Amino acid sequence: MNLSISDELELFSKELQRYMSPHALEKLAREIGFVQRKSKYRAQDLVALCVWLSENIANTSLTQLCSRLEANTGISMSPEGLNQRFNSQAIQFLQQLLAHLLHQQFCSSSKIPTLYTNYFRRIRVLDSTHFGVRKRFWV
Image 1 (cartoon, rainbow, N blue to C red):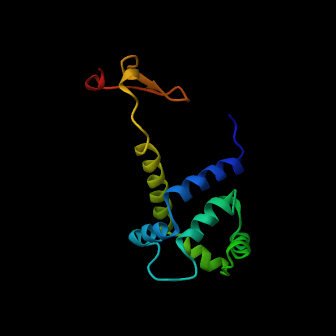
Image 2 (cartoon, rainbow, N blue to C red):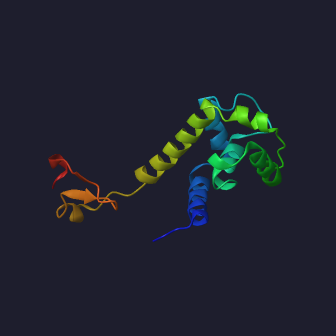
Image 3 (cartoon, one colour):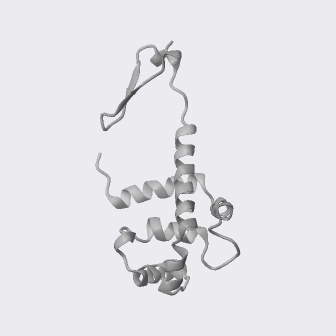
């Protein structure tokens, strides 16, 4: 199965909306220190800019990012102002957001029925990585 970048972003968008409301994003951003006071540039705007509005954010100029931000959210910001917002708290916020989504995805999965655990002693991941299951989990 080969997904295009837009398909991958669409899937990520649905998962993000399913697990994180704008209020939850703001709360997480406040806990981390990315948001300290109310301003026009919110946590959801950072997520939108980094995930949906720019396919290759690392190679896009700050001026172009500011233009995309204004066109899509109505927030006008100078390139230097945006540059100052790409700080360690922004990175930590995005890392925590991804960690939260992964946690929700894997922890909400239902357990494998015990009928199947009798037949399997290890798990193979798509890239051929494998790891053993501890004997205490064997039935």
